[in-house]
Length: 112
Image (cartoon, rainbow, N blue to C red; front, side):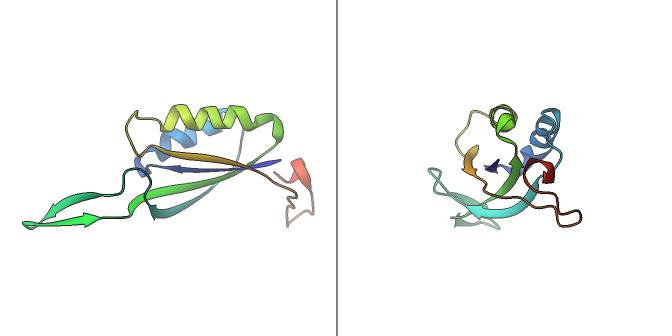
């Protein structure tokens, strides 16, 4: 099993969710986060005053998947979240040692 963590632009959530659903994955966790990468933020104008936005709003998706679906999910996220512009995000794939469904006690791929 793998844990896929993706950082995406907030307005891409619906597209990404639909693309992930098409791969057969049934669940994900979404967290609102703030951060920056190569963009290093940007400046905005508010009531005539210019100010710097250092941390940009992003969404963090966490998706636990069986090993055989990792490539399909990563590809689905990449294609649906890409705008071709800076700040599209990142995807991280980590090993997941154990998963347990609390209600039934199922473990491993069955718990996903």
